[in-house]
Image: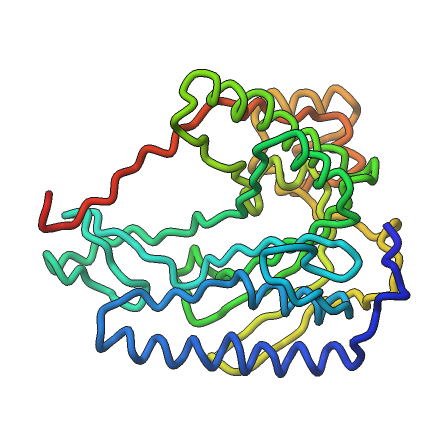
Length: 305
């Protein structure tokens, strides 16, 4: 879990990160929201390639200029981005889609809006070769943009985070267990049952039990308030060794009752803590999530319903 310092070539990282956020994330978002109010089209901006730029600035390492073909970062790191900002919502009354900027449904004028916050990272594993690629990747960099105060319906305050998982590290061994379980128990079985349909990729959900069980290490966090004020709360410089850095604590609230009992049986008084740290998580097992799922959703226009 030691970055290859010979590849670090970008300096003044925090200053460049601030400029990038202003020019590539905040500016375009303000403009697309303006046009969305006119066109009624989604203001959601995809974070794939901007996420790769941001990962380069955070790690201090350039990409290799090949887009989706080849390594995302010059040291071989892989970047995955998840954007929960400006997702499309749904009316609870008529099931019509509602833009995040709208407070009423334009179809039925209901104010009963289901605000969605369920975007996730997608991990494609379609062969043993792709599994081996993940095993050989020095680190996975997961970029997440979301609302820190989502439960308060605060859609003006934004957050950008970066997490690292090093697949070859014993601390992060659960990550490869997840991918191997998906490939062998979902992908291969599904293809055997129906060779004409492709299973959905592996969903890797932020802030889920499986996410915390992989012991992700946060290397960056910034809060954007009032659409322009950027506060960097955490930034681990590119050259810093990650081996001794603390992983993210798991909220106790996502534990099942049997998992609480397991931890209590190992001498932890779970009633007295709100979070489960990495040492405590060593006593827990990954949950069984390896059930086949088919990509079978049909796009239906409202006029066809």
